[in-house]
Image (tube, rainbow, N blue to C red; front, side):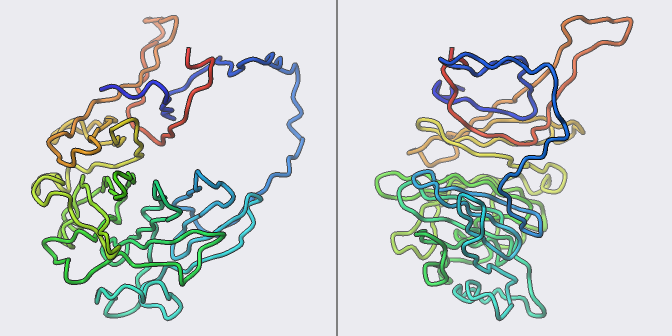
Length: 329
């Protein structure tokens, strides 16, 4: 599997040491002493609860969008809050966004919190997609100007297109979801990786891997091919073989997912894999995956002292970035 040479994939389970990222300027020498009592004043934002996703529009990086349970915040470059949008709980009279979707899936009693599972931008337009854990994982489309407003939000759901056995508008799983958006020929495609188990699978049938196209009417999604645009874990292994989707990215004409899963259905050991799908060929028969093996081996082994390799097989986080000139060599 080849990944475009212009990209560098940083896996935080691997450690690169003694690397200098100095291109044309002279590198600064390491200080002989450090003042650990010095206090830096840095911009900050307190969301008052765990942050679930962060997104920045790459074509106009003047705002930062921060998603937490039941809220989406817009921050400026100084990390000051300039707007907020309530996204839950479903059933709350204060959640105007929730009322824009005529799903008939509101809780019969009480309210349902909405955890953010997906926060990604469109590739061509200033549109932010927000998908939560409530209402079977449906998504909302937010038109971005300077900030998010209620009247700029659209529900991506069409009731007559969805049934418990076939729900193209059900995107996010409450157990975790990664989505990568691709624009092709003025159409928007979602490549989706979702963690599922037997409980989640009973609610409008989410898939482990799926490819969906945004309808021209912007009322929801459809599977590109009903028979060949998704795959999922076999029913008998849904609870014993979970697949956690950690990160997704694209390079050239492929979309990639980084996952953590058991080595096999009978193994207790975990490993990290990279999976690939082809853009333009929206069928799972093009799905491929490889195991990523990260190993630390001491330079000097002392067998008598018990020196041996250390394996880092469980990916914690990842980020895709372009390498500097020194590293590209």
